[in-house]
Image 1 (cartoon, rainbow, N blue to C red):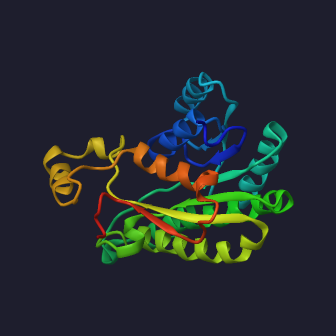
Image 2 (spheres, helix red, strand yellow):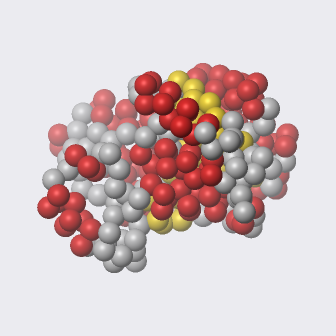
Image 3 (cartoon, helix red, strand yellow):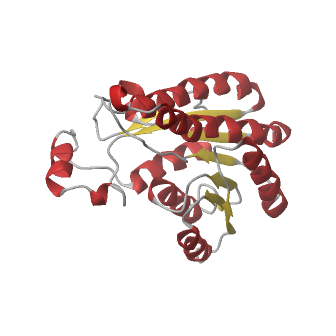
Length: 248
């Protein structure tokens, strides 16, 4: 059974990592996928071809999620190409880790701009379409770090905690129009980025998780699939921890 048959989804930052995993699962379940990327042009073009092979409409857009005008243009372009937008996954994000005493103002601002402001940008611009349709599902990718904090990541934690507060507020604002807004807080997810870390460090993290493994992009994508589909028709304003029990 294809849970997203005939629906169109925008996924930001989807040429690699968690975003790519979400796009793959959505396509498998029949969704047409509009995804954004910024720097990985060749990777994005290859991914567009690969995903199109699953028989759905797929298009990549080079777009800066942290820029409001770019988000507005993205919605215009996607509506022109796909005619409807049913699902939005705000996934674009960066880290600039450092202890507060060593963190520059620029590194704080950059992380908040890309991680949190981007969620405002696309949610605000897409809400007009969803309000007209009287339906929609908005999914914001937060982090366990936004729930519990982490030394050396005050900028990242602040941006991801901000996403949770924003999500709850939008759920309250748009619920009467059948538009749902939820957040997902991934824990330690193994992607290309974590592949660059030394194995002993990674194993130490795995051992500290109740399920004794790191998560996969597919683990996060399956939670997104639930929140994007009609299976979660009565779920809004929630934060779903996908963390192997880290916060238990």
